[in-house]
Length: 139
Image (cartoon, rainbow, N blue to C red; front, side, top):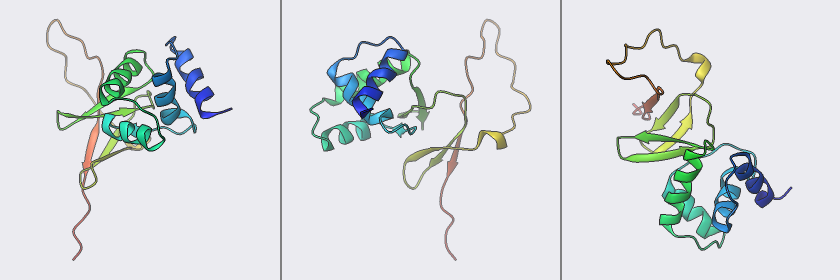
């Protein structure tokens, strides 16, 4: 099965119409069967490197549509930098500060003993765990 077919099937699982841009971006995201953490800019660059003409605005809009459809999750770092993850299961992340890179952290090692009660009239929608890392200074 080609990467485009895999991308088209991925879109179909969420009932999204397979436009040319969506299929192109979906193939880059899941075409090899691996999970990805991307920014809109890195996906834009990857599309252009493969010779696909797609605007940055289209990449942002498509990633938003993928998140809305449940195909991806958005992980915000520093309140302004968003990464998009094809692994939609609840799991923690490592954010490598020196490289501005997001990777999965082992969820089986994470223990959250108790969450605070939500304020009156609110409910907890999700819990995002981002563990910030930096390389140790060499002596």
